[in-house]
Image 1: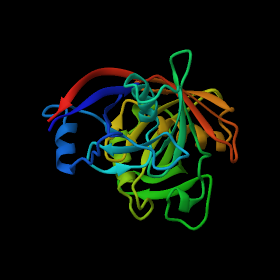
Image 2 (image 1 turned 90 degrees about the vertical axis):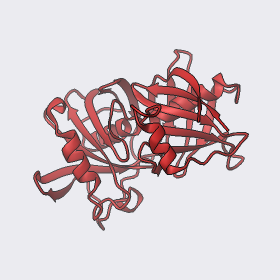
Image 3 (image 1 turned 45 degrees about the vertical axis):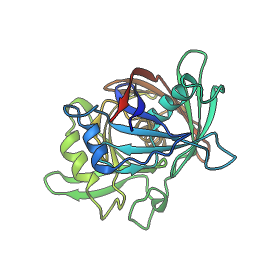
Length: 277
């Protein structure tokens, strides 16, 4: 039996969105990989599934599957799209929604200026919470990688693990090669890692490219933007708010620091609707 879907994107980070609030949907891994193929399927970075609320404290559950079939715990651009999807499909009349993923509870709001905000819990810097396989927390870590030598990075958990590498020119950064190499460094990152390449300059702006686990480099990564901002702010390079320039466009991120929540602002667009085979 076919099932309807909506194709959406946040700054070019594209999704297939499924309403499973009335009928359970659990994708088969092989089927999902075929559908993610950009020549033989629909093509997407992630598949998003909107579920009934798992508890009275939230409005919806929210599952995220990468193009390789793996399930992950966070997707900031996807959360913005889900807020618009729920309103457009009449699943909620509220412009502010509480979502629960496998790892995180967050709030999303469709704003009067047509952007969508995502409020995330405070970033996690303790290694066990990222998770990062080291006993001692640090603002900067180092690892030796064949072909690249010693790599210095910051690490943070935002419902999914992130490593952030400062680069002089993000346009020339070896995102694919180094991103994949660090992502597969299981002795450091037992659950894999999203790798951000951040070019810091002014205190209210940075440029970023992200190699996402299970998807490769995407045009934009919402949680990656939040991670790069949080690490940059912890390094003393950024103010409370900054514009994060990605290949697909710009997000705004604000964080007061310490145990305060982090907020991201950006667009969410519907592309088309269709039926899955």
